[in-house]
Length: 399
Ligand SMILES: *[C@@H]1O[C@H](CO)[C@@H](O)[C@H](O)[C@H]1NC(C)=O
Ligand code: FES
Ligand SMILES: [Fe+2]
Image (cartoon, rainbow, N blue to C red; front, side, top):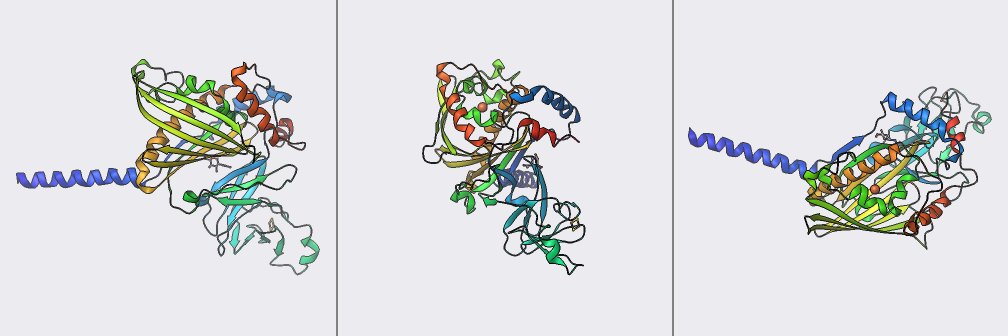
């Protein structure tokens, strides 16, 4: 009787531990902070926008932007995605498994191809009257009830967007001068599936898009915003709680633009976690900013490498989707999740600053803040003659 009890308890504990282990190793974790349904904050934001006027830089710089993850677009499915002031349909072929990006609205009578659109091979049929468009070119290829295709055809082309699927993400090329896109570097471990995605976070940020990458060149904020113990949490009002003062973070960063690829910039980041005066953890990271919407971070730890992909997509002039995807070999899932925990808290602290700041066009900078000046002059390449101004971008949202 007694032996049986102990045996059952032992079995129970083993199963529970295996469950926990399975979760830590194999179940991706997610963390979401988006106030999409928060009407009040949307209204306040709209009020704030009115005051901004012409001081703001264009809200949609030129570059590659993530529209979706590869997993979100299953073969034979289509998705409507609104961002960068445009409406896209993203769909994946049933045969070739390729992804295509077109304008969402059908030139016939305006139905949204991303809402009930029917994917056939590399083509998509409109959910309203089944006009059929080719994903490769955007050309109209069939009207099921009409023989006079050639007359309508030339008017019925739908806009085809240059897109690229790489590293588990689907990107669209947005360029107001229609310049040729730059290459998105393939990260072998991620692209060929050797590394697993152990988790991701999603933030909705209410700021100008430039504020977010500017963080990488902002050395002075590292100690203020990211210096106090992550155990103190993400709320910058309370994070300096003395209960957690036994630990702190020391950061060092060096920002430089890439002389070979002008759309790229690099940050060399070092991080030390100090327990009292003892250096407990040291992490070095190589960070590549690739245009305005995409960043790769390679973290070198004693156990191995962790790769973080950061994507930043403007939904509206001052509303950004910011995500991080955490990749590592399957057996380093526990470590990737630990890193994700720390990184997510640190980003959430930045988000509190971004959400409540205003955009300063000409900040006062002491000479120690030269990287910020370098960053701004580097980043200005993503604005061009035909970039939509803030007022133009905002106009299309008034209805
Ligand atoms: C923005 O984020 C939300 C969830 O946080 C997601 O549903 C949506 O697809 C994202 N849009 C883009 C364009 O990234
Ligand atoms: S609206 Fe698309 S086929 Fe008529
Ligand atoms: Fe930061």
